[in-house]
Length: 299
Image 1 (cartoon, rainbow, N blue to C red):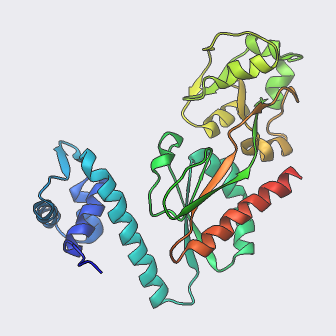
Image 2: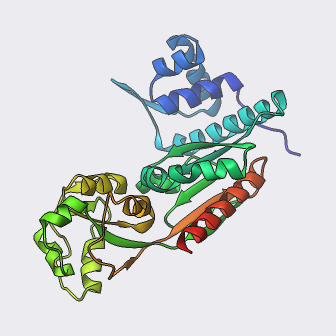
């Protein structure tokens, strides 16, 4: 086995905390050391690597491009050390499964169902984090499971499609009482709620309905699907959103769909999970559970 090339652990802890907080002072508070001690550890690590790691700015520090991948790997390794240490110190404690997804999938689909997984796997505690959908592909490498809306390949990971999905128009019951929506064309006379980065969805849906519309339609824009859903609930207009994110709201009569058809085929939902390491078995069971829940809901 080749000799390991490792910098001092103290420098890595300081680097990881400073990069995560983008601030030396916050890192110092977390590590219970002084600001100057953090600066010194970072300087020692930069000397060891013979490369700078941060750009110093007035409000904090920013990782340099070449240091971002290093930060992700260091963070993942420190997380694994922490998890392994916890398992040795407390062998009877619940295992931690680190799951990452987008805010919309977390709020509108996963969290409402997590209690079912806790009953299914009482010995596993899910630690949930979220990443904006535009950056989900770069989700923290320490995550055991990443739930996303497109397939993704990583070494020592498997990626499975856990659910099909489609997009439907929805509005609040009060909005539908106030406005006469008898055909898809009637939607054009009302605010169309849209999600940044998904502006093609409405034109594609209208195309399925046999209507030609501009490639860009006017209407309020939101960063996340869950914000678009909330806006629809508050009578701001009609949202075109994944069915999986509004299933509970439709059942609870918080939202209604004015038309059963057309349905715009969505990207589906995928689970990228680790196939190697201490959490691999639990990660696969979580992916299997996701698929089972989706199948049960669709059935």
